Image (cartoon, rainbow, N blue to C red; front, side, top):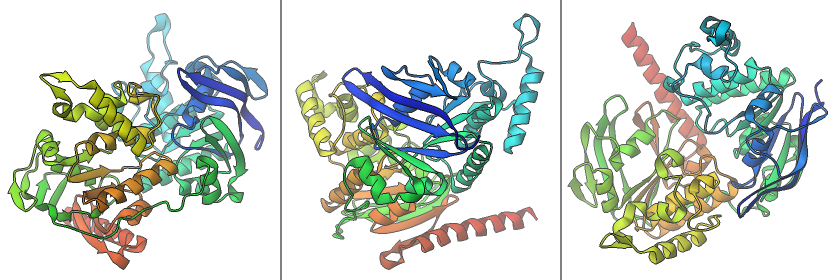
Length: 509
């Protein structure tokens, strides 16, 4: 029945070595509601959800499901009870088919335990059709986009008649169109009296689709409020213990000499005729939707990709397009969009991650100077307000916001001249966002050139001195001063997309 409590926890605690993740937390989700769970990175949100999903065993407290106290020991037990967690980093097997992933752990069999592929694909097909998916049950999951992989995860909820579905930062890698599709599916689940737990740092999403909000801070419950009664300011204060003076900080305009100039850079199938420049002390924003080619431009400048055409000028002189090692030696550094896959070695400690690209600065005759490494680690832990137990704590065990700060520390310790930040605050909390935005302004005021790539319009508007818009592999607008408005950015991106679509239609005709 709508409004009835489906799942609740009472007084749950969870500790890890040296870390108190949860302390006496109570939380519930009702049938037919979307219940947001918010907090800074490291507040305990993911730990709490992993307790509900059977990935962690609580150290204290109890879990109630449909009025019955339960002991959820494994994810399979949670799924069998109708509790499904859709991870931020999707938990699919890329080499298996869509159907095999949907029913993983419960494949239908014939006699002698032989897989019944016909029934497996037929059952999966019905679920995919109900969700309006445009891919087949036999498709290998590794070939799908992030959005389609997420649909496979949601199909699991449909296949097993989930009573509670937990979404952990589900829109972090989705386009606006894909996000609207997701919200439509959530509305459908809600209409069928499924309880939804929605973890997100995006305030606009919280106010758009949720009914209640629960806030954690440092593993402790701060309270639950009806979304209709909340404001951005009240939720922010609950999360970080204070009000933010400003969500965005823009550096003073004091530009110096040109650092980088690009003329006619192209990479077949990705982007064409890319021309721009950036100066000392300037924050250049690069705005566009996911898939516009922004990351590919950054990767080409850093040497991850090789340009097919174009000219590159560094501090006034023309140079060949560099390799990543050459880019680092020049002082051109890239903080990539995917910090876990591209920005960090998650099995190593924070100290080693900071110094890894700069071993020559911290070694002599092949022997690392551990004391100097630790001094640099300590400086940036304090400067960037990184929450970690020490220099050897694995960065893979840290929150997203703290991981991102280590990515920044890795480049800052070598005094770069140009820092490219690709989605620098994706999936991190408002407090950490504020720290990073203030850092961007501080670096620019010290003379560093900064390029900020972001699909979050308020962010790119809030920190940039100048904004270039990009769509479908090409720049299509440049805005400064009073012309930097949401309307102008949307119009530039939309107009180019529409004209490109028209050209394709005429060519096909």
